[in-house]
Amino acid sequence: MDPIGFISRGQKAEYAIRRVKDFLSRLENIRLGGRIRFLLGLALFGLLAALAAQTSARVYIQPQSLALALGDRALSTVQVDDVANMFGFELHLAFDPSRVQIVDGNPDASGIQLQPGDMFTVGDGFLVANQVDNELGTAVFAFSLMAPAPPMSGAGTLVQFEVQAIAAGASDLLLEQTILASPDGEALPFVAQNSSVVVEGEVEGEDEPASDVPPTNDEVVAQYSSAAVESDGAPASDAPLTDDEAELSSDAPDVEQELAAADLEGREPAREQQDDGSGDGFQRFGIAMISLALVAAFLVALLVRWGLKQG
Image 1 (cartoon, rainbow, N blue to C red):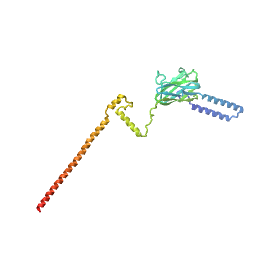
Image 2 (image 1 turned 120 degrees about the horizontal axis):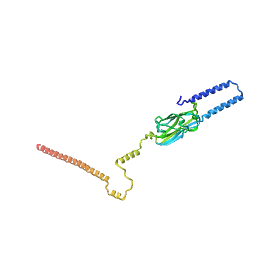
Image 3 (image 1 turned 135 degrees about the vertical axis):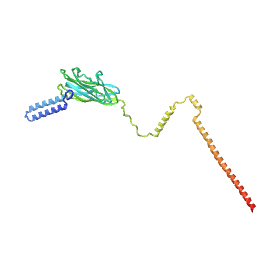
Image 4 (image 1 turned 90 degrees about the vertical axis):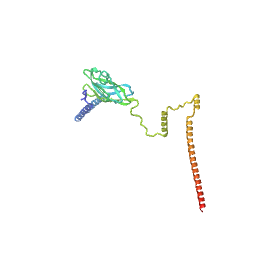
């Protein structure tokens, strides 16, 4: 048993099917004339037509689609068309709370409320439920008339509410469970139609993935060149020099050329000193060898003279 005491449509359908089967089984056991069978056929056809006419009621969310920017609000309504003999109803809505939220329709009351529509007057009955949960993404609204108020018929708005966009993406507005009831507590047949909301903007967590392709040589050179410019300061301007700047530039010494010349001058003396040192070494070695040769010749001459004297 639901809060308003409605029977389910499934139970009603099973009951109707059982009654039709019983009726058909009785017809098989009774011999009727052609005219009576024709009249019974017309009556059965009218009954089926009446049942089909009752299913023309429609419950839907209006507008069918919404496109909002971040932070924007828009009004949505739950409408009913072609309803007859409705004494109460119950609506269960669902939405994505990470994309949209329902704005409180009655700030003076506790909790978050939906707003009653123009299909009924709240004073003619009582609110069974009116609550929104923006954390779970659900809302419920239930209302029933009280005697001697007449049943509701025709078309109108059941509830209305504001939807606020809080994050980019899409969210459905679903009529998860809907019940329309007659004064006797029987469920009225209907067709439900949902809605959707699209919040425009960049969706979080959907950045482009980093490429696995290695950079080319030109890209590496450009990367290091830009890094060098950032570390050294602002890059040189490509704007042409004025006459005064050109004159100062021509008079200014070329620092790079002076550094290169100083480097070469520092290397040349060292090279000359290395060459001079090696030449002196070879020269001293030659003089020493000559001196030794002369001493050896002098000694040989002395030995020769000493030998002659002895002989």
